[in-house]
Length: 445
Ligand code: BES
Ligand code: ZN
Image (cartoon, rainbow, N blue to C red):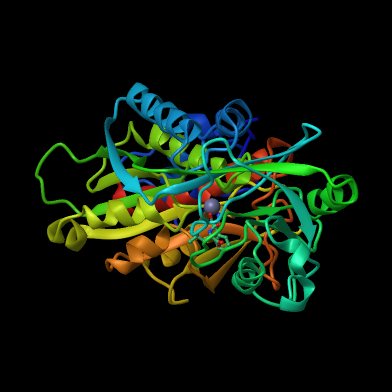
């Protein structure tokens, strides 16, 4: 929905902070044209007016609902990458597909003898099973203390509750007692299966939800049933970054600005906010900024493999030459900018060192100029792709919506509830306006 920008009517022409307002005139954003030397506000409007919240919402829908979870290295992540590439090419960009290898992945399946499928996460470090899987009875080992095991646990798959001590110790206790596999269930409600992290294990290990653990105790342990656990290692898995570049026509020594967002998600999460939101906003900025003259190079970087530890963005940064790094002036990273969770009223600007930089300062000044409704908070935090830029010396900010004061993320984060239902078009637009006008401020002629 396009908002008409009503300008206050005054009896004389007023000039406040460089914004000239002509009495009686209602400015329609799409009609604002900025010539060189015109006001900052007019320049802002050149970017803000054409940003379409409908298009961004449709792109979040496509990525999260049509494609769904886009787990690193899967067909769905690849499908998202080609969607992004096609779109950027349709806008007229030169697009680079940057492929890279990711660490081997463990894939698991769990089925009861009654034929019920149980959602399971397999940690890196788990052993694999034979291709037909491991079929065994379950042993209810409580919290998995050494003395929770008896002679009866030998040859069975230990079912252990999360809590009290580490996943690794639970696995070691089960192995010492002769268990042939371990299933760890959550001790708090969660819509997806537990993601236990362990070191190396000699037996297969998986994580399941609290509800699944309790159901297995009631339906399988009590009835002496069995389960079949299959764990496979996927080797030689690839992911990719998609990069659209636009440089000024003349010269080859321009400063470079990187605008980034990751498009992969965690398992079982449609990743509407994390991070179809940032992806959709970045795509829209690529569309809008395509037509204006620039005097710096701009790169739109869509990173894969963020959720397994910033692998895509670190690969991108590792491929930059010394010269490109020295010409890089900043990175605007958007990750989780579209949640409708009502408490997330602030836009946090996360920097790795907690200090302001050219990106955060530019955004702050832009927010004042354009009247961004949300409070902006400078905060020290890594955990997203801005870290990879920071590590090679490029000033970087991660823009992310949080609850002011607590810095809490929405409750749907990394769960199957991270869906289109919890996306706000107004907030997508707010992020697009803020980052788009800031970027344009830095790159325009
Ligand atoms: N979208 C989140 C961003 C984020 C930033 C979450 C700051 C929490 C705090 C990101 O995709 C994510 O989940 N990051 C991981 C770490 C990453 C290195 C795998 C996280 O914070 O658990
Ligand atoms: Zn994310």
